[in-house]
Amino acid sequence: EAALKASQSTYIVNDKITPREDATTYNNYYEFGTSKGDPAAYSGDFKPMPWKIKIDGLVKTPMEFDVADLIAKMPLEERIYRFRCVEAWSMVVPWTGFALSELIKQAEPLGSAKYVAFQTALRPEEMPGVGGFTPVLDWPYREGLRLDEAMHPLAIMAVGIYGDVLPNQNGAPIRLVVPWKYGFKSIKSIEKITLTDKQPVTAWNVAAPGEYGFYSNVNPERDHPRWSQAQERVLGTGGGFFGGTGKRDTEKFNGYGEEVAHLYAGMDLMVDY
Amino acid sequence: MLAKISPWWIYGIGFIPAAWYFYHGAINDLGANPIQTFEHLLGEWALRFMIATLLVTPLRDLTRVNFIRFRRALGLMTFYYVLMHFLTYFILDRGMNLPVIFVDILKRPYIILGMTAFVGLIALAATSNTWSIRTLGRGWGRLHKLVYLIATLGVVHFFMAVKSWPPRPFVYATIIGVLLGYRLVKLLLDQRRAAA
Image 1 (cartoon, rainbow over the protein chains, first blue to last red):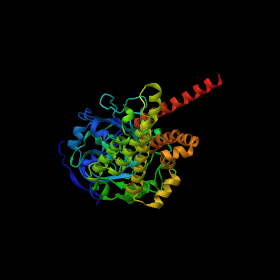
Image 2: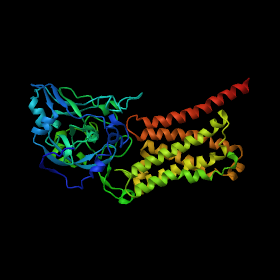
Image 3: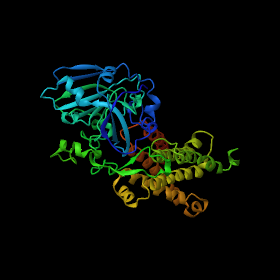
Image 4: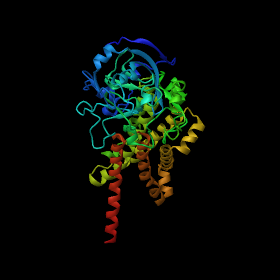
């Protein structure tokens, strides 16, 4: 894994950083299997380079970028974000990347564009988890943001973690990180970004609409229908069983409310969950 | 030959997975989320012992292998693993926070199902002794038919605890479904025979 050159960002939380070992072996990336260790164990055949990422839809100039070029040319920053999974655990991860807005701006969105749709690569021969009699999700994995969410400075395209390029299990070579939303919104191994005027279809919303809404902002007040979201277990605090339960109260918008709450002014987040 | 072997080896071997994972969890070598990993492993081992328990009858019917002398030990191992699964939830996962656990039991369907199965298993474990069999007579057999319901609740509890429809619960559901289906078919055939 090549080290990345990045400037230090001001977007840094002061919480203890999750050990790299934990952040790279405890992953949800169902294309490689549904157990937490599967992505690290079974993503060895996945080829993240060379990689093209396309921006199309309601833009003036549809574009295709080579990810190696992006890594070389974009102003990379290291940001330390809280990462809150919908399964009520969390990590603190140093990402290297650039603002998603920087990428979208280059394609010049049309005035009619209201949403941004993202799509993960689908390569059955490199992804052992996508086959089977009962596909776990309706592949390819899809996610979406409202355009104003996508243009928010906290939303980044990450190309690295812990100072190195992304390992396959963490979404190599390029992924979204939206720290105020549940982790599954931060779609991995992105192949295509499409600007649209309609709310995009998203993988988890299709799988269970009552459980995973389009917005999926971190919200301790709205329980998942099957479990509470009021608290989260902070992973990688060490000590095994006897390091304490490592629980903390979940913060609304994952603690990024000051920056992002205005995006949802006037909305009822219990309805638009 | 089997008649000479004491069932105690099942307890000796049966606790090895729990002890092994507990050791790894205690030295912080059970991954990033050791408590939940341990909790899930114990739950899966409970299902495995449940399957072993339910296998005894069809194995005896269809082959000449008779493990009936070990069935009580296998059933009790199922109970012990569910008990450890519960204690992990109660002590390590929820930190004995009673208000939180109370809300769980009232509000979370998968926990309600799991607790129901646990209570059922307590009744079965408490009567898994020769004295109870003698005292309860025919009632004992009827009571222990609860195991079919408990096995079903266990599998549904697994499905409800996970996101989407991953393969593992399906594997357990299929095996337990076949084992319960075997009994249903046998019951229907017996009834037809009795009617004829």
